[in-house]
Length: 121
Ligand code: SF4
Image (cartoon, rainbow, N blue to C red; front, side, top):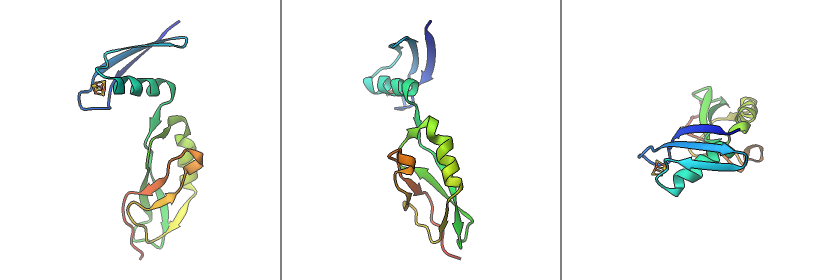
């Protein structure tokens, strides 16, 4: 039995409407206007990834938390695990935008970086 997926490709502003049919190992893709879109569809079906955004607690800062994100997409099924890990972290101010706070978070190959400055109180 086959499974049908429908997407709007987000790789470029054209936003092609794509239908994909997966039957066993065989994937048929229709609607992509370029190979980059087809690659994205394959990744959405077989190994979806997302850039994760969150916050980390800050000690002695003018704000109690700093916003952070991964510097590259991480597997969607690792996101809740990474969120739990980040919720247990606390760093000290000052924090600089772009600062790497965690390298290779949980062996995903992605770094956690600050997306804003937090000065010391
Ligand atoms: S399939 Fe290609 S042309 Fe269409 S939205 Fe995706 S990247 Fe753009």
